[in-house]
Each structure stands twice: as C-alpha cells, then as structure tokens.
Amino acid sequence: MKKMTSKELRKAWINFYLERGHIDIGQTSLIGDGTTGVLFNVAGMQPLMPYLLGQKHPSGKTRLCNIQGCVRTNDIESIGDSSHVSFFEMMGSWSLGDYFKEERTKWSYELLTQVFGLPQDRLAATVFEGNESVPRDDETAKLREKSGFLKENIYYLPKSDNWWELERGPCGPDSEMFYITDKPACGPDCNPSCSCGHYVEVGNDVFMQYERIDDDKYIPLKQKNVDTGWGFERILAFLNTNGDVYLTDLFEGAIRILEQASGKKYNENKSDTYSMRIVADHIRTSVMLLGDKAHLVPSNIGAGYILRRLIRRAVRHAKILNIPTTVFEKLVNFYIDDVYGEFYEGLTESKEFVLTELNKEVKKFENTLSAGIKEFEKVTRNMVAGDKLDGANSFRLYDTFGFPVELTEELAKERGLSVDVEGFNQKFKEHQERSRGNIATFKGGLESTGEMETKYHTATHLLNAALKVVVNPDTHQMGSNITAERLRFDFNCDHKLTDEEKAAVQKLVNDWIKQDLTVTKTYMKKEDAVKSGAECMFLEKYPDEVSVYTIGDVSKELCGGPHVEHTGVLGEFVIQKEESSSSGVRRIKAILK
Ligand code: SER
Image 1 (cartoon, rainbow, N blue to C red):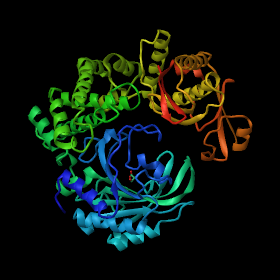
Image 2: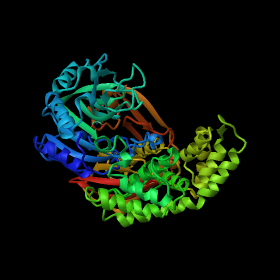
Image 3: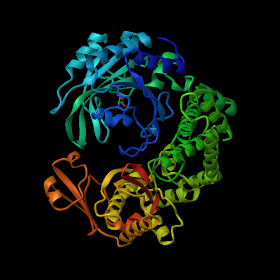
Image 4: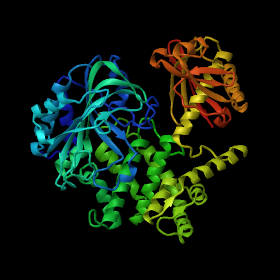
C-alpha cells in the first residue's frame, strides 16, 4: 500500500487520466440545480447527464475526469463510525461513447494495484447478475478476472446492488470494487453486499447503456458510456489510517482541535469518539455548503433545512463534549485554510460569510438548547423503553425550542424511546394553517421537500397559463427547473416583460390560487392528449401513455407531476426576477410564500 497525502491522491487520480487522454472538467456546485429531483449533488455524473444521454460535451471531448464534492445525507444517522461522512469527494472519470469495458476494467486494476498499491488478495468485485430485461454481465466478470482480480473474489449480485440509476436519466449495470479489511467476515455467506465491515466499497464502474424514462421503463442509449465514481475519503483512509477517515489529513487537524478543547482523547472511549466525529463531519459539510458558489443558508425547507439540522446536531454534540461552540471558528479555519481552500473556487473568499452564517445559526439554537433538553427530560420522565413521544410535545420542542424533529428522535432513541412523527407532522400542518389565517406570522414552515416541490409544479402550470393570457397566447414553456425553494420558468417571448405585465401575471396566478381550483389528473394516449388541446412541450420525451393535469378551466398540461389537489394550498405567488435566458427566451424566477 502506498501512503499518500490527500493532495497527492488528488494529483495521482487526475494525472492517471490525463495520461490516458482525458481532460479535467473541474467541479460544479454541491447544491442540486433542481433538474434531477435531488437536493444536493450526490454523484460526479449528476451534472453530466445531458452528455451521457448523447449531447456533445462543450469541450468537444469524450474522455473526462474530475474530483467532485458530493453531499449525501440519507444515512446521516450512520455518521459517528469510522467510515461514514456526509460530505465526500468522488473521484470520477467518464467515457462518453468512447472506450468501454475492456479499457475500464484494465485501468481500474492498474489504479488499485499500481497507483494505490493495494494487494491483489485484498480486492473483491461485484457484477450484475441479470434480470428479465438485462442479461447477466459475464463479460465484465471475465474482464475483471483478466485484469487481475481473483476469480473467487468476484460476486454476481442483483439489481439492488449492481445497478446505478437516479430517478430519471442515464443508468445501467455497475461493477463495484471492494477492499477486504482485517475485520473478520460475519459468517460463511458474507459477501460484498453485507454491511458487517469485512468488505468496504472503494469504487464503482457503471456501464451506462440505458435511459430511465419512467419508474420502470428503460430505453437503450444511442451511445455506450462509462461512469466511474471512486471514494476519495475511503481510499485515503485505507492507504494511511487503516480505514478511519477521521485520522486522515482531511480531518486530523479538526480532531486535534476537538481533543484540545475537550481535554478528551479520540478513540479512548466510544461515546466521546462518536461525538467528535459528528462535530468534525457536520461542521465540515456545513462549511462546504455555506461556502459553496450557491451560498446556501440554514432555513426550514429543502437543502437549507438539512444544513440547519447538521449545524444544530453539531451544537448538541459539542455540548456533550463540553466544549464551547466558539471552537467552531477554529474548525472552519482548518477546513478552509489547510484542506479545501486550494481546491474549491471561491471558498477562501467566502470565509467571512461562512463564519457569520454559521455563528448566527449556532447562536439561535444555543439560546434554547438547554431549556429544550430540560423540557424533553420533563415530558419523557415517566416514559419507559418502547414508549412513543406524542406529536404535540415533539411539535412544541420544534416550535418553542427549535428542535428539528430528527433531533428529538435522536434524543428519544438514546433513551430507548421513539417519536410519533406522523403526529408531529399533523400538529405542524394545523399550526401552519392557523398561521396562514393569521397574516403569515409563521414563515416557511417545515414542509417536507416533496410537498414544496409538488406545490411548485402546480404553480408552474398556473404561471404558464397566466403568461398566455397576459403576454401572448403563443408563449410556451422552453424549460423549467424546480427546487424546494423556488421555481424557474423559461418561455419564448420577444421582449422584456414590462412592470405592468409582471404585476398582471402575478395577480392572475394569485387570483387562481385564491379561487382554490381543483387539480385533476387523467391518463390518456399521447395523441389524444394533443388532440384535447393540452399543452404538450417536449412531446418526444414522454411515453405513449401520458398523464394530463387540468387545473379548473385555466390550464391543461401534459406532465409527469406530482401536483397538489387544490390550488388554495399554494400560498402567495411572488415573481422575484424576470430576465433574459437566451435569445428570444425570457426567464422568470418565483417563490411561494
Ligand atoms: N454514479 C456512480 C456512483 O455514484 C459512479 O460514479 O456510484
């Protein structure tokens, strides 16, 4: 095994590909742009979807590589062990209809053994076992063996393990590579899909040959691509620290700061080590999100809500370690000055912003944290293991003490209790309805992201319809992009909208919202939808059977949905910006309040 610093590993990855005709395409924002329905960039391939689907890459090249920051918070509860992190970097490389399995498998083995120096008998690989639509990937299994993997370390696994896809877009069978650790196998049937820690994934090679156009509908792609994503932190940890990412140079300085401030030693006892990892991880991810080009800030919805949860959880674990949150400033300095500033454009310049926003959120929560914990203890005092904290109390902890319900769940779990999350959501809704009637004293709300995006879909249809009434019956959607925080809508139009036009569009949408129009969904054949006069843009992207959404008698549009049932729940529609998108195309950004 070759010891390498994080900076050396970055260089080694990029150089390997430059030598093989690739170009380094650099990084994009960590915050999802709304096109894939995910809040954050979760994989290096995410911004490359159009090119994997066949569009020419702006560089004109077909071999690309980079190291892309990603955020995945779906397993935030696993953080605290030695390998999970919420922000991670993915070392990526792509063939856009260029080379395929032969080169890919050869290079993967070269990387693992020659560049990283991992021993052959510590490597395992998995390949797709096939299903009714796609055959077993014998070719990759053979090529893995030819490249140097031991036959007995190659496993065939089902779609749940060996298929890469997002909600929509390019996808295909994958072949993952694993490092076999010193941790003993959990039993005779232990294989790489097992989470016991004997096998740890280090990389994934995806053979993208399909496009997912519906939940279970796939069509072959025109070109065969390779999408590669290898875990930067994981590999660094195996090369240097026996698998503990928190001891690599990406974290080590942070752990030292926490040791000093707390007077405790990392790895001396389980619970302090757990809290140190949570603080180190969550502050690191918060720094990367606040310092991102998109300048995310904590809020009660969507990506901003995840950021809020990360910061508040870090505050609680800092208290457990008995360290003042002023120490966070040292952590921010370490991450920006020593680790990431050099590689993330704009991060160093954003340091003041990161510190100010982090501090604001920390202060907001610190003021109520101890009182909230006391309150939690009071309301659970007479409970016994297995009991459930009711919705009313968990909502009060949120509303009065700023406890995200996930934090209350964590506190409950530590005492063997659970939380009635449905009851919480119900209380939340009631509160929101009351507040709306009360001239919106309560802003934002803790609506789930799904709900907000639903809402924005419906608002987009109303906007589309209002533009036809106010501006020109021939305006059509040219593009749309929805996040939990706003909608963005592009439409054909030969002039900048006047203030009067903007006001009239906004008013019309709000009138329709107030009328609480019913939204209905019908299924029909694509050609019938066209005949019925439904707005049908990008027709070729839809399957033969389509859903058409009708809103009162103001809008009829072909759409994948989802939508709300009544427009009354949308709240107030506000146009924030109207600008040019490209020649003859205008863009509106709007929010719901
Ligand atoms: N898209 C694949 C992954 O995220 C490989 O890059 O694992």
